[in-house]
Length: 254
Image (cartoon, rainbow, N blue to C red; front, side, top):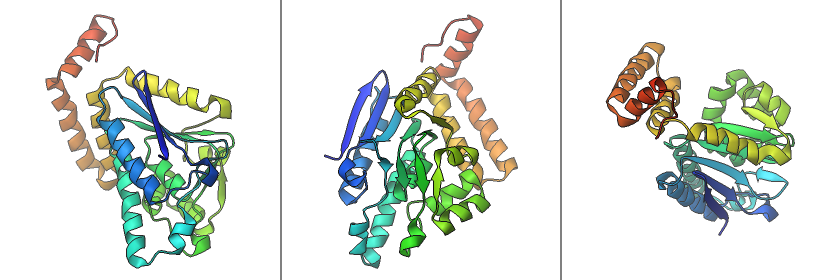
């Protein structure tokens, strides 16, 4: 087993546990990771998921290069599609997924982090899309998600140079939400998770959906959908509870 999970106080923790390989991902790791993410998403005792890497050196150092060396075109396509399945599963999760990033987040590791809803980095985190150095390109969503997050110009610079990005630089360009001390990484992610848990699950789910489609719609179309989803919530028990609790000056019970 390469993936460790635990559930505590409505937070599901998912740890890629392959530190001897800097948590690099091969087919077995991908398959297990997809299965564990699905399990936590469907678990009623989980409201927020935190993804991290085992050990002190890496979040995820990327895909397994030795594995890719033996691939042909068909195998490579399957590998890319499996990476897309994982990252799309994370991005479209109805439960917020937070990346707790320490050490190396290279290649597929960076792409997995890009698919998470919130990214918190430790001071020693290093990001890179180094695929062009080995004759490849980012194949798990990097060419699509990175420009949406940091802008086309910076994405071109990161992908075409294959350069390393420090945690400080990652924060400056909007690649991560916050940079914290290494020892405080998980506790800070837990604080964010706790703040999310207090809110309406329905409202969170709908907000994630709207944010995800915002980049593929023009503003007018997006606003139309937003207004519709906003009004639909008024027919839900959670919205009634939230409005009532606010008027009664008490915490809502979701």
